[in-house]
Every structure is written in structure tokens, then in C-alpha cells.
Amino acid sequence: MNFQPLGNRVLVERVEDAQTTASGIIIPDNAKEKPSQGKIVAIGGDVETITVGDTVVFGKYSGNELSLDGQEYLIMDADDIFGIIK
Image 1 (cartoon, rainbow, N blue to C red):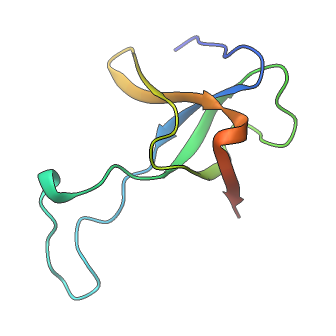
Image 2 (tube, rainbow, N blue to C red):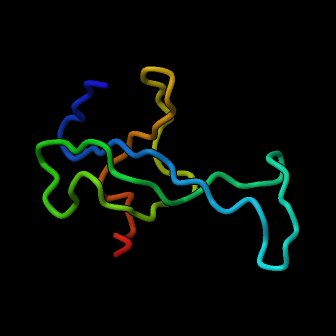
Image 3 (cartoon, rainbow, N blue to C red):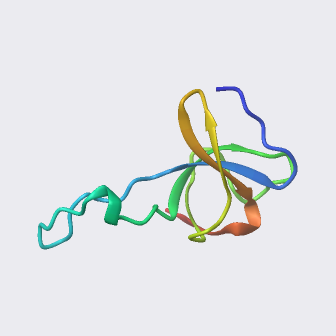
């Protein structure tokens, strides 16, 4: 994949949540919400506080979906990211 976000945008690959609850109940795909965590795949030139490879938390409805090489990503403003998971 060769994609470079412009300005203050980042490209994020969603990180899937666990398929079961703590008590062992399996959650079907149609009942799960889309995860609000992801891994930074690419950053624009104006982004200073986030680096490629960081795992971040973002808003539930943040970003726009984008498909590149058969893989699903989100492109969003860096300002839509709440924080970095260390």
C-alpha cells in the first residue's frame, strides 16, 4: 500500500475487539459495534504528536472509511484522536 495522507490527517487500521465477553458469551458480528481503537498506518506532514505504529482511541463516528488493496481503513483528522494507548 502506498498512501500518504495530506495535512493533519491520519490513516488508521481498526483494531478488532475480543469476540467474547469476560463471562464467555460469544458476541455475534451483527451485534458488535465497530471498534474505536486503531493502529496508525500513515500520517500527514502536519501531524506532530502521533507516529506510525501507535495504537490510538478515537470517536465512535470519526473518520471516513477507505478501502485500499482490499483492506479497510479510516482516514481522519488527527484532532479526532482522543489519545494514544501505551
